Image (cartoon, rainbow, N blue to C red; front, top):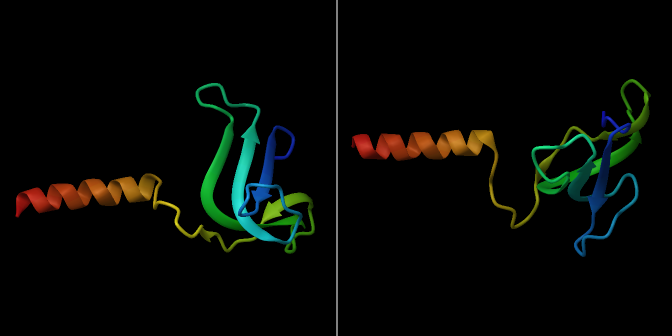
Length: 94
């Protein structure tokens, strides 16, 4: 579930234009609570945003559970950084 009271999520098409509910696109969001970073972010994630949760029927936007990297998007995030550091450390030990 998106915390839509201070967080505005949007799905963008290939031209970075907002798309409607139920369509696949790149995820972006505006975070009004952000003070330590710019609150306007576009992820490299390919998502489908639904108008309400299909499991609990709670109102408000929710992302479909299947999230994947957008075509051409760099692999990033904490898990990727840990993998890179471990790979570098292990290659130095050889």
